[in-house]
Image (cartoon, rainbow, N blue to C red; front, side, top):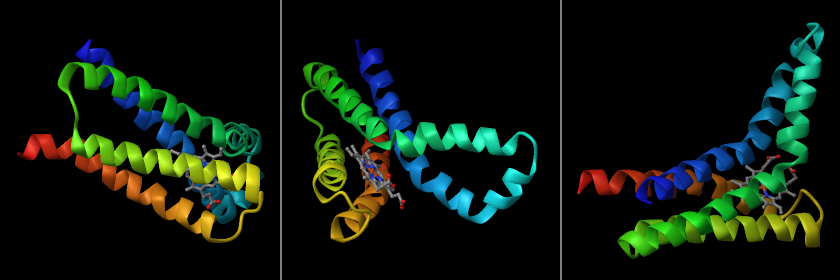
Length: 138
Ligand code: HEM
């Protein structure tokens, strides 16, 4: 059971990487888009990647929360509460709520929600790193 709980933790990280590929692919496209499109395979590959990670960004975000809930249920049952886990989970839930606000209510890529959404994406990396590393250090 603990293996499944741990595996779900890695699925959260994989889905999270899927969400931030939104930002990374936009930067790559802006900087190297012309070079990439000049080759025969670059353009179709880039177009598939952008469809999967930019257009479907919100579903990668929803997947992180789904895996988070399953990870929490299994780990809590076996090990009880983890403070660093609760902090990382709270940041992730806040991030998804902000994303939903931006996507469904505000509907514009501008304003405080967008900057906060970007900053929290970085905070999440720190939160997850602390959650993974702290038990090994103490
Ligand atoms: C783990 C969860 C998530 C992370 C780490 C994350 C991260 C990011 C980042 C870094 C950006 C900036 C992209 C840029 O600079 O252009 C962004 C944009 C955006 N996010 Fe998220 N996001 C998450 C979940 C969600 C969810 C669940 C939704 C909606 C339901 C959402 C909606 C949006 C929207 C509408 C934008 C701006 C438009 C776009 O670039 O697609 N995000 N997100």
